[in-house]
Length: 206
Length: 209
Image 1 (spheres, rainbow over the protein chains, first blue to last red):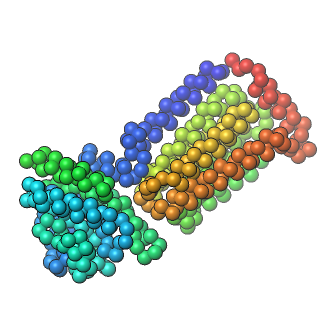
Image 2: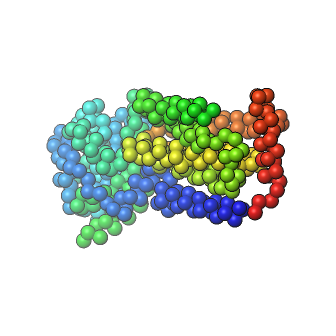
């Protein structure tokens, strides 16, 4: 009886551990954010098209950056905390891209997920806080909420109201390759990692 | 007794998954983990215990008891991973899988196993549940980042606090139980009860082969 009990115990233990192994990608992704970052490195998803308006009011699409690597962040201009940290990272990214050979091959895009409140003027104001927009760094808002929602879902970003008029979201630096596939996601302060990833993406795609 | 258990189980199940209540539970991390998940497990446990009454129906006591409780723990552990808490909020199919598996793979075996295991394993399981909850609670309280994309940091802290409270309650209840001994049942069934108690004590002390 004890032997049978032990056998069933070990069997259940194995089944339980395999379920958790499977459910965490081999104990590597315990959070949805970890899973999202891991998933895009394995199978970079092609992002849906999104029509944008930049800080000057000009209409563009994300596709217009095709052929370059895009480093994308999500923002809302009234953000007091997280976006400022992310913006500082992007400021550093901006500086190091401008200094390097990436200048011709990479762009930075700060995309507002609050298009109703963030008009071109707000975006321009926000841009000036980080040294202003140029041909490398673009500050944009989506033109349709429907497209924004589809896009956020494809990227895996969840935006929650924080209860005080602002938003909370899983912030990160998103790396999009020349063909428009999301191929890497790194933490908000992983500036060097983002640069390495951009270089590797460019090298991989000739 | 049996019908009561089945009815109570259905009520608990309804309380867990009826649309307005379910969305109420899932709107907060603490209620998602500490109300909805336990309701589902409890519903399954009552169903698992529904068929078992007298000692006559106790087949192979304690043989697979520990395994069934382990199954409950594994299933609960899976659905308490931040990643799958998130997935259950974001994806209805995952939520359905959560509901079915917590009732069938966590609840049923718990109910089936709990009446078969002896006092020592029961105490072990109880103490383990308390210490795991306390450890998880501290982890959630002190974690510097947001663990769930669908919940705010404040809810994470609330979950941590509540987990520690529940752990304290489990320890207190366990202590009271340990100091007062097994609860006396109503006099009408006392003969039967004392009979089973003797039996389960024998099961505990005699080596099983």
